[in-house]
Amino acid sequence: MIELTLRRVITVYTPLALSWLLMAAESPVAVSILSRGAEPKLHTAALLALMAICLMLESPVIDLLTTSTALGSDAQRLSVLSRFTLLMMGLCTAAHLLLVATPAYGWLMDVMQLPQALRDILLPALVIMLPWSAAIGWRRYRQGIMIRNGLTRAISLGTGLRLLTIASVGFGLASLTKLPGIQVAAAAIVSSVVVEALFVHFASKSAVEIQTSAPADERPLDLRAVLKFHTPLTGATFVQLASISLISAALARTHDSILQMAAWQVCSSIAWSFRTMTFALPEVIISLGTNRQAATLLRRFCLNLGLVLSALQLGFAISGLDRWVFERVLHTSPDTALVAHYALLAMALIPVISAATSYVRGRLTSAHVTLARLWSIGASTVVLQASLMLLVTMGYPGWVVGSVSVYTSILTDFLVQAVFWLRSEHREISEPLALQ
Image (cartoon, rainbow, N blue to C red):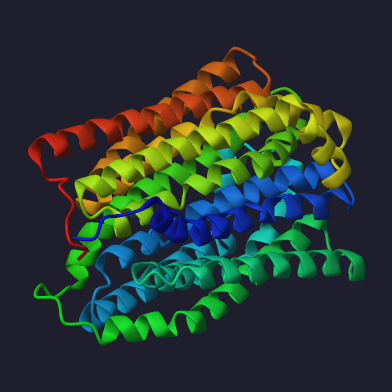
């Protein structure tokens, strides 16, 4: 048995973290594009609602990364996973089409209680975003195969290409056309994910060839088994991403709602950059956590990473550098930047909590205890909604409503998963398993 080293962890983790970081950079780019156009607060607030809806629609395909990493061990399994991926892509696209082409759009706007000004500009942007879920689904499925084979460098290259595309298409359309800002942002975002999906498709061919020539697993896979593994992950992700819509709806009911929603989007565009680097951890744990020595090393790595990221976010806010970025780089108004500053400062501990949660999630997924995540996200969403309702009723500013509710939600998420993890450790089902 080869002992896992910190250098090996960093080698696998770094390209994945860089990919997540580059994806996080999309939001500041989009905000920068909108801030240079007409009615920047309105369109930045619309971006928050647009991404909340699109992320919720794509939830069934997001965890294809985890599913293909864990299950794609041979040609037969990849064949089943490919069919499953195409099925999920089709279902997500159909749901998106139904939303924009039927009265479901009006119903959703009523549920989210968005101001009329946002409702009027959101629908065309949602139509532009139709290819979003399919592109994300195929890209994450193929990336999982690459991660399983340790071919992670190309993943960050693909995300770099995605960032380049969103910037070039976004600033190009803003300069050459008179399209509303939210439509420019939507066109840039959807173009970037399609380009990345095409890149990953071709970049992953060597990884696919490796897996298709691998010895056949003694346990053949079928769609029912994939569905059993994937459904709890998808359910958890759907509920988790629906929480973004819950926050948007709550902020829409606060005083000066357009300002609060715009500021939350601006804050999130930077806060996401710190937190997102913890999202690469579960796949690292799944692929490398093959024994208890490895698990111990990975646990220390996750916690230390979270502490560093929280310290960096706190320093970024305390120093005032965040307001300089908000106003000078993203070109947001001073009042929007001030509210975003308060929110960023308040959420400085989010990265360390997220890192701890990612470690536990990775360990549970390795043990195929995927139902734990569904329970944890369900509980955290109930807590989130209760917090949002209470704080809005009490009349707190939007940034307080958002940040306090996020804390209560992610702490609940961590605690529930930790209980499942400790129980599985006690029963010795989380003893590292061979990847299936």
